[in-house]
Image (tube, rainbow, N blue to C red; front, top):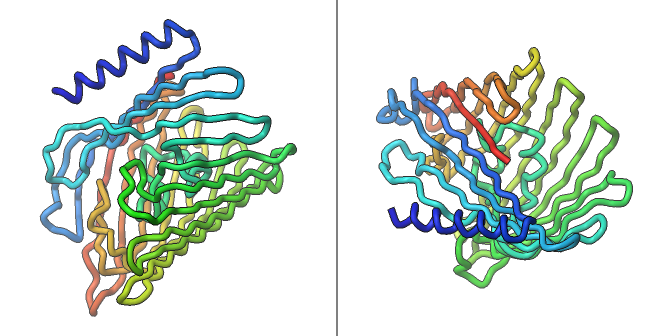
Length: 336
């Protein structure tokens, strides 16, 4: 109840500010599913079903003048572990000051990382599933730090450099920092390529670095992208190297109806797989992830997306974990 009261106070303040200064904008979105676990490597999850919100955003943008603007965003989501009965609680997702200068901007505060910003926008189905680097825990979508992002004058090249805590939107807990950089090139009106790298200093002998490549093609009725990820995780026990390949596409089937599909191949077991929210993955085996769905848009800001997620595991110690099969009815709506 206290969290709801706090949220109402913040909302009232922001609305009041909007009327007082006339330069603010409130917007938000919600997405969730009805899910049914038909089959799972963890038999205790089989036949689990229900409704849940996976994300609720409440965003306030305020323009100070032609150069300066601020954003404040709250996020709420469920635990997604199929067992907790915790209520939705708000956390700060974005809180930053932006200084826009011609074709580049400086950003200070909690803001989006370069890791998969473009890839997620191109994928277009974040309400259905995260992109590979996000889903498999290679990085966080947010960090507290300073960033510069922009394009060349002809808008063929774009870049995003960020120096941050490496602690997402949580408080800093060590002296190490994280540097991220993405560089994109628009080959022509249909084809774009992007390279990404990061390096993170972590406590002890546990530093990490990531490299990523992405290529995409799109026209009015079709888009497709391919992503290759590599991450090195140092430890006293020896380095762990993780590699994932992801390919996805979407095509218009008729007016207001699109179909989409995605295939991920993890060439290594994911140690953090069992802790993935909404889609726990066996952490002992390599796997293939397949996603198929349809996007029905009765309104441009309302989407109903029946889909199915499947995970097929490779052998581990002479046996394969059971496959995961989760059909879902995903709903997504936005106001702005």
